[in-house]
Image 1 (tube, rainbow, N blue to C red):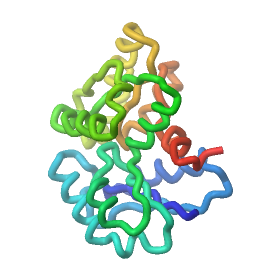
Image 2 (image 1 turned 90 degrees about the horizontal axis):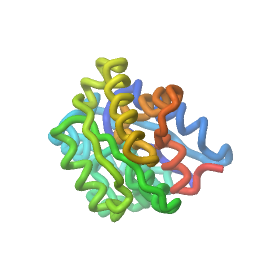
Image 3 (image 1 turned 30 degrees about the vertical axis):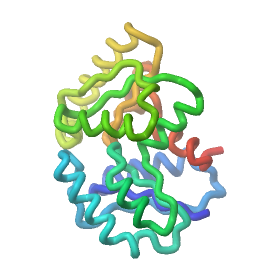
Length: 211
């Protein structure tokens, strides 16, 4: 089975993070490609960005989905998931939905950490729509948007560490830094000793693409 991991934004750096993370965790026998959404916003930083990226993916679906057996939308908001799933001739999976499914399979709660007040309701809506809202132990919001976190990674890391520290005093559930920007943060937080879910291995596990 050939899998397309599609980054809904157009940022090459985030696409490289996906590419390296998937290569490190995926079963070596799997056939796949990691691509970005040409013409989309560099970072999905608002609901308007999310809608634009979704429209572009749907418009380009006949081309981007060609020669693949399934597609994974690599976005914290599972950008365009419903319309892509309805229009696509191949199965479509959401990144965040897959991470939640993996955690649900393990019957383990988590602490979602969202980027920015504007996107928080959309994240929460996704958790409800996925059917996995019951996994949520505690929710927190980083005081930075995805674009701000990309521009100031050390500030974002310190803010995320403070939230993880506070949550670890409340429960023993892992933090889930929800977002493409959160992948690098999650690795750095784990190196600091925090209990943080690593989303790429979880996503691959849910799709049975990891050993």
